[in-house]
Length: 144
Image (cartoon, rainbow, N blue to C red):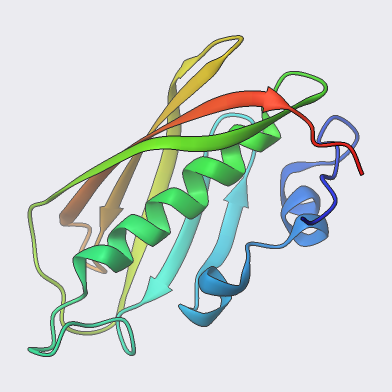
């Protein structure tokens, strides 16, 4: 397991650079553009993340949403805790075949034991294509 980097001493983008987004997010070309306690914004290319018929894969929306929601959950985690995903759902309302998508992640509930984030994913024209919601549970940091 990778070392958990405490977020309390880092600004948002430094937290992301220190911790990394993970191998899957890297493979999918996810790039963090903004990362603060209020929200996270990232982009992902459509190319190489498509279904056989050329549409952005629904699972790619979920990976983008979980990447942002989980990372943000860990940024705002209570001291000594780590956020782990326990539920994710997505509603796809548009198709994308080229370019990139932008995801904006905002917390809609932050408690002592759970956080819930909404991630709105839009195409380059600003049209909403998917809405992802993820719930993370806060657990004690694993000891090394």
